[in-house]
Image (tube, rainbow, N blue to C red; front, side, top):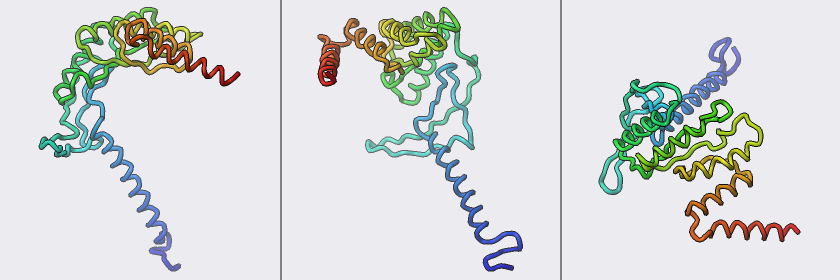
Length: 226
């Protein structure tokens, strides 16, 4: 039998290699499990379904003692709930109902309304002609009834259609007027300028400071390039 061999088929190097693979796999699993301790979504924004307890993928609650003498636990105990329909809700009223439940559950965990961001769910107008009007009405309802911040994927409205930047540039100012407070959006100049213009016209840019600063920056860039 060769030196270092445990049997005729397995040697020490193989055992060490297998042990390393097992250790590495366990380390990755542990890290991904700990990822879910803090900041892991408790509610699905589309259907409002709460994350279920999972003894394998969700870590056991750990106590954290804060400087002020308080103790918090992460993750908090969360129980599955199956009383909400699956799939993206079709009406603004249904979306408001789910948003209301999310805000309420977040409050149970000590999360203040001003720290909550709701996605009113932007869908492509290429698949449903009323998709954008439903989103806009959802934004208005959330602003009126909940008053929380909102963010959405603005470019979703133009998915599958030509001249997407033009559609996105038209959608965002309307959404801002309805109550949208932030967006995941294209950086195409026409889109960015439409948002800047809407900020000014809606009174969000006092005395047009940002609008004028952006204009001066463009002029300076053009002068440098000349």
